[in-house]
Image (tube, rainbow, N blue to C red; front, side, top):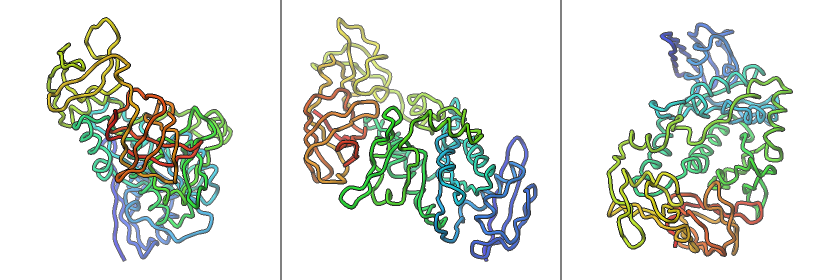
Length: 417
C-alpha cells in the first residue's frame, strides 16, 4: 500500500486529492469535485474520470508520478500537445488509446506561453480531447528535468559562441526517451505522436524518413532519436498533409481543428531568445565588430546575439552586404564579411551514423536544403566533405544525413571550414 496526493491552484481556488493504492488499484480516495468515485478503479480507469477542472488537475498531479497499467494488446500511448496533429493521432490510435502530455518548464517572464506545446493550457486541451472520447489522459510534470536536459545546455551553448537548436535536443533525446518509458509503464504496445515523418526498415533497424508532405516534414527535428526507441514508435500522420489533418479533426468535431500552431522553442514562451538569454545570466558585454583582417567596423552589445549567416541587425554600414561569419570568443568580437566568406566545404560533426553510407545529403540547418556530401566516419562522429559550399554553417546546429528520404546519421556541428 502507498499513499499519494496531488494539488492544484487557479485564480485563488485550491483542490487536493489523496489516494491510497494497492498496486495499480485505488483502494481509498479523498477527492471532491470529480464526476464519479475513484475507489476500486485502476489508475488507468481513474485517468479517464472528469469533473471540475481544478479537481481533475489535482487528480492528474496525484497519479502522474506513479502511473502504471498492466499490458494490454493493442493499447497505444499517444503523445498529446493539445494541438490538431496529436488530436488526430489520438483518433487514429483507436478505442484502446491513452493520452500523455509532458508539462515542461517555460520562462515565467515570457510574453505568451499559451501557444506552447507544453503550457498548462495545452495540457488542459489535450486532456479534454481524451476525456470527450472517454479515454484516459496522464500528465507528466517534467519541468525541472527538462530545464536541466534542454534549457541549461541551450544557454551554455550560446555562452560558448554556438547556435544550438533546442528542439532537436528535446525531440532527439529527452522527449522521446521519456515518452517511450511511459508507454512501457502504461502497458502500451507502442507510442504514437503527431509528427510529420515516416518510419522505414533498413538493415534490420527502424529509421526516420521524410514525410510525404515536404512542407510539413519534421524528420530533421527527429534525426537524433535513438533508432532503438523507434521500434516502439508510430507516426500516423506521415503519409498526409496538414490540410488533411485539420479536415479529419473537423469531421470528428474536435476542438483542436482550429487551434493555432504551437511555437518553436516552447520554453521561450513567446520571448525573443536574446532577451531570454539575458534573463538567464548571459551578460551582454560590448565588443568590436571586425572584418576578416581584424579591422574594427563597429561595436556590438553582446557577441552571443549573433549567428553565422545573419545579415540583418548587424548595425554596420558598408558598400556591400555584410554577413556574420562567426565570433572570436577570446576577443569578444563578432566577425563579419561578404557572403562568399560564409562558404564552407568541410564540416566536423559529433554524433553517430545509423547505417553504412559513403555519400549522403547533409542538411545543416532546419530551413536549409540538403547538400550532397562525402561522409567519413571519425572517432566522435563523422566528417562531411561537401560537393558544393554551404553558407551559414554554425557550431551547435544539427547535421542530419539523408540517403534518399531516410535519415542515416545525425549529430552536432563542432567545426567547419
